[in-house]
Length: 274
Ligand SMILES: Nc1ncnc2c1ncn2[C@@H]1O[C@H](COP(=O)(O)OP(=O)(O)OP(=O)(O)O)[C@@H](O)[C@H]1O
Ligand SMILES: [Mg+2]
Picture 1 (cartoon, rainbow, N blue to C red):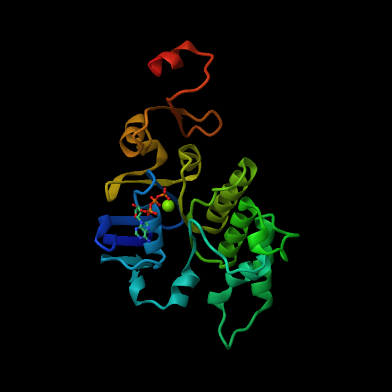
Picture 2 (cartoon, rainbow, N blue to C red):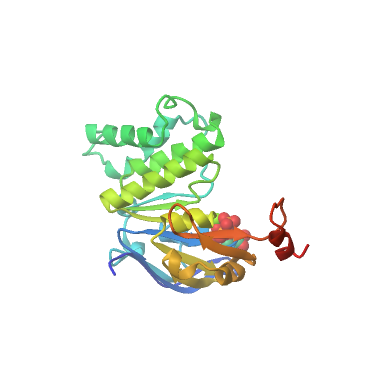
């Protein structure tokens, strides 16, 4: 397997609290990898350490075989873009100014703003459906529009590796699918490596080539959705009883949780112990 990123015995902590312990992971190049796991299990912590936003307590992150700890910030940013979970933009910043920030790693005093930079920014705005909102302040946008502005900035960075922490949060169903389709196309047509955190298991199964389930400071299971997603994994990783069926459109695993709810089938009610 060609590896885009390799994690070696990675331990991540906040003060005395260890979140991830001695984790080894190879992220396949040119594929879509999705991290899943319950709230607080360390998905964002892991993603942030891959992007070098968090220094490991021990272990290393290798990018194209080289330790990212020895690279300059710009070097890392030319290879890898990250959309954090709850990004905060400076007050008064417009959508266009935010998206243009994505081009920063490609500039220097020798290489000023170019037509290529302009084209990348325009393409990112178009791909995320933000045309017409360029001059709006990011703070004044709806949650979904704001999320798309940050995704546009990440795309404008034009990197081979794109990390996204819950990119579909705040998005309506249409925009969720649009964003995931866009990432899918970037992967299929341009071979970009996508690594993201998703909470919707069914969308994760539909888009991911590789799923990594995190639990108890390490990897609980990894592999293709078809290999790893079953009722037992969902029970162990999320503590949730569910039935795993097959998505009628895509053939990928479809997780249907038990729990309460209106039902026109008596068997669901009895499975819920009612
Ligand atoms: N800056 C921080 N300082 C101290 N503890 C933190 C910090 N950030 C996260 N944590 C703790 O580390 C653990 C893992 O957090 P993390 O944000 O990585 O979880 P997550 O899997 O992304 O959860 P979620 O699904 O809710 O986004 C949690 O217990 C959290 O409270
Ligand atoms: Mg998180």
